Image (spheres, rainbow, N blue to C red):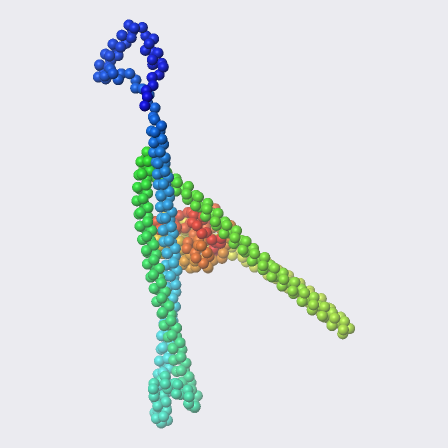
Length: 483
């Protein structure tokens, strides 16, 4: 390291006369003695120029800090993404549980109904057996002989039926009693088998519901653990960022929120792009189906026209051969009749269109009521498998919203998609449902469209019923559902 003295400093020292320099020196000495500073360091410090090694070291340290900041930013972003994935898995598991529980409820109801039918059939069979026994007793008391008694009581009523069926037993009443007993026992046997099968299905469905409930609970527990881990990771990361960047933790938290918002906007833009690609692909598929159908109809029309010409030509030749023109007249009349049929079809189509418009008006009113109900639930927490009041899962919210408008929807997102009329995303109107899934048969989320590309939905564990862009989640299907 070297010291540099400015030229001005040296010049100032040599421009004073010798006596003046002595006076100035004495004054400086007195001043230094008064302050306790040694006279040896009274002159200004020389300017220090960092060496190239120190400059390189400082740059390296700054680079290391910047790299550490970038790494922490990436870690926090990855933590947020992993938490979202964990929360999405809760939604998928919850929908699976809802579907399994819905199936269990239906099979339980079917089993109860089958058991009730079997019970009634058993009572009817027992009544028929009793009537058969009484008839046998009457025959015996009437002196018809032990053979007839053995016929009706030997081996019990069931064996009696089989043995009686093989005998030529005379008498209209006797045949009726035997037939009634046989029919009642056969009906009971069938219904008892159905009840047992229904009970087996119900037990299996209940077991599946229990299994999926356990899986959903595990997913919820995993998501909760992930949320705590991410919170701890974020707290540590924010402290490190504050130290590296010489800022406060609050400021770093605000910065991370801003970065998260930027990332969310990027994700939504990507979801929008993918959804639009899916919509274009689906539109192209539908257009191809329409083209194929139009080609099929056109081919059928041409074939019909060819056959009609052939028929008319055959009729003309037949008329020429017979020397009459009645065949030609008949052909003309037939053509007129065909035209009349086409006109009638057009009138019918117009009537159908008018009815559809009326239905749309009524549907709009119900949709407004459903949307109003959903808005009233804003801010209430998401709870898996919840159908209100006070907490909701995605399909529970849409189901109860439309129920408030007088329309019944099934319990799960998948069944709601299957039960509604499919509408292209570009044609959605408030009250329609939007669905999310890798395919139309693997749907795991549903929301209610409220206009301007926005929906109300119950997103996931740890969140609340809120407004979101319909591109908030990935896997938006090309079609919504209209109730």
